[in-house]
Length: 483
Image 1 (cartoon, helix red, strand yellow):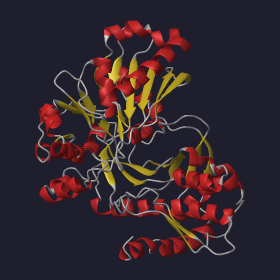
Image 2 (cartoon, one colour; image 1 turned 90 degrees about the vertical axis):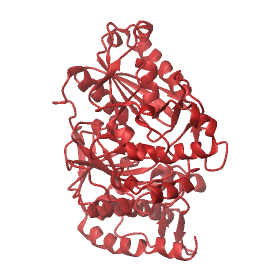
Image 3 (cartoon, one colour; image 1 turned 135 degrees about the horizontal axis):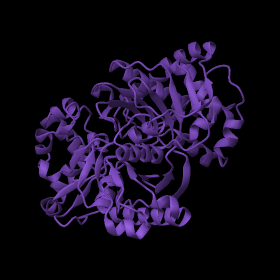
Image 4 (tube, one colour; image 1 turned 180 degrees about the vertical axis):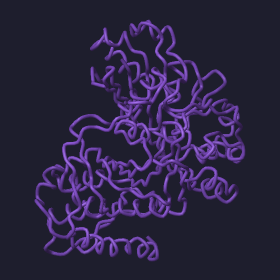
């Protein structure tokens, strides 16, 4: 038996799976985010642990015999969060989250002062990453910075509570900007740029390796016979890749969740900082990955549905089959954009609206706009030397065959749709826990069974390529106009 714990921004989810990876039980506990100032986003680290206790209590209640036999626990979590601890392991302040934008000035200054963030770190210095957050604390809360003994990522604080060990994995740690991503080790130069040393960092392990054992008092609390191993785990996207079997070079998935991700596994470190591609270590050894990230995927459709006072399903149901791209353009930049623009200030907009524009036309434009943004991600990955032959679709938006047909036709690659089930980060975490317990990754990270494959529609591929060419001119035009 194996447990996967996913520490998300809005909730903690835990699953219990068997030796054959069948789901035995699951539980969730909600979390809240605090926004004390515009652009800030924070969370109480101890709220993660309280939520994990609630989840594990529920699993123990629902499946006590199976929980007693647990041999491995895997962890996943939202990336980049700056969790600052004192020398007693107590949080010094709320965690600064991945979607916090306060460190924009520090980002520009760090890039200018230390170019190796772009080479060793392999990524643009963005407010979402951990390093500029610490530089902000260093400048604005010097007393807190001086007392900081350890800097942990969210899931690694949960690990500390589970095991008493300060440990991080490669995939999550790559998102701090302090890792030499090619060497899979902390960089003394990048740490020094923000006034830190290796002593402030956790020990590193691979995601499928052991990071410690569950503490005896917690084994007793949840009725577990013998201390299970706690795996290194992974950042949420790398863990999701483990959940869908995207661990071999060339395997890829597209996630249509609140944000959108085009993820591909690589056999080497392959950055493209000019187009804001994320290049990180994977959660399995000797493997890396790239991501193109857009900030508002289903969030764009949800925003439109809220505005029009209809459900997303009602809106997409207005469309039926489509024979051409929308005549209206939509930029899905509701909260800025990452790939390829790295622009926190740009905002969304419709272009080409007329008296005849109705709900269906607006919906079609939103679906197209998100697909066009994913095409921008594919183009950025291609520049980095990556070729994608097909993708697996996950996330809430993948329930729309129409949306997937647009994406398949625009990206000009087949999109595979798994059978219904949970193939998210919690399953990937559980699989990593299984690998750590068994001491092998062989046969652990299988791909899910498919219910369909959606091929590009040739007529749409040509027309959407032309439409994307027009659409992509909007962003530079807006920036030139001062937006």
